[in-house]
Length: 367
Image (cartoon, rainbow, N blue to C red; front, side, top):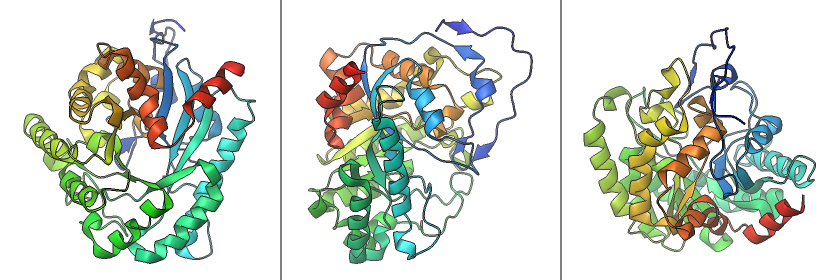
């Protein structure tokens, strides 16, 4: 792979389309920039990605495998719920089991070793509606049976905002979900089962997660997408003010020892960056410059051992390629110690999701 722009591109890339909080990825647009992989030997566990089919732009096994195999040393990935392949019938609360069955199938395909050394979906985070209270126990147990040892926990999206530009009203995602009494009855089922919780919310909701984490200090929680800073709609043009508020909320959350944070997700449109609107995709220097304040602040507040890098693909693929994204992360933490880099790129995610990193690395070397 060579650095620099590709030549001979004559056709204009397709116009950008927005699906909720992110821009749909455009392969023709991404192909306008190529760059060399930095630190190609650096061990990586991609702590957060999705796999899905239509109506969103297709991102199935072949697309994921191609990105993971594009040059960085990714040894494992963690699949996170995205309402993909839910069952079409049966009890409503059990339909999400289909997604874990699907992700486990992707993992089995990867584990054959026929598609490269990386173990895709080595960890699986599914969905259970904890808002049904103690009845969630049966759903969680069904998810555990479907995912086997790969199943690690659940995510129930609580992202909500009064501004429809930030978040359109979605049934089952009310304001204040994390503080709801019945939701917390469901949440209480996680710890005894050894399951973790992924939290996806918007920046103004971070205090709600802090309150939840304090109420359940024995349950492992990871905050997705650096707390999802917002910069669109009524939040546009207020970057300095909102960054200060985000940092204050994150500092309070960091006092909860049971909470980790994923570094990524900043490629989503809701964060307010304009990379997806440009004629050419950004290079890793540009991406690193934009995302650096958020990522450096998270590491400063939580420490490297409670931070993990995520691709959040394909949503963040609307901003840049897989090569550029991981190069940007490597640029941002170029001054960190070797032990800190190991935590950020692989060890923290492996520890949180109970992955055998040594075994995964050995498998990769054997292929």
